[in-house]
Amino acid sequence: MVALYLALAVVAGGMLPLQGAINARLAQAVGGPVWAAAFSGVVLTVALALVAGGMTRGGPRLEVLDTLPWWAWIGGFCGAVLLSVSTALTPRLGAEQLIALVMTGQVLGSVALDNFGLLGLPRQPLNVKHAIAAGLLVVGAALMR
Picture: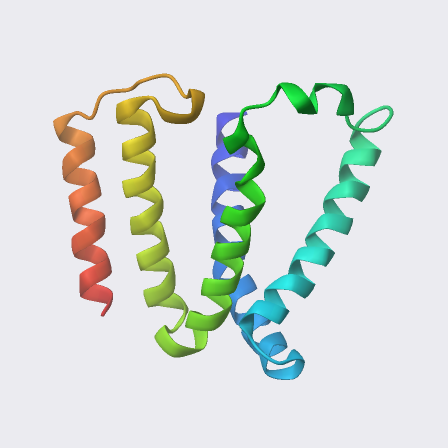
């Protein structure tokens, strides 16, 4: 089962450069990267609603929405930033460099979230091995330039 999870993670990671290239082409047609990201977001919303509806009984549990912390609502904003920036920068930087930089940002952000136990995550203090790995990602992203 672990091998399946690892494979799914790799496939999901491969979607980001594919999405950037596709949305870059869409941006040329619809008037810019933010419009392309918006159209992509509509498709994303419809696809997720269909999948969620097929996987669960009933709709979402709306009665708990008022119990969520304020920051639980900004995930969509994070996605909008990622979609818009990757759409705008893929044709300028190329897929390789964009993904290297995005991965670096993901790892550095993850290190901060885990190290400080932010947003409800369990605290996992940074250790030397993880610090070296994160540093190597920064070096790798710089080498992609």
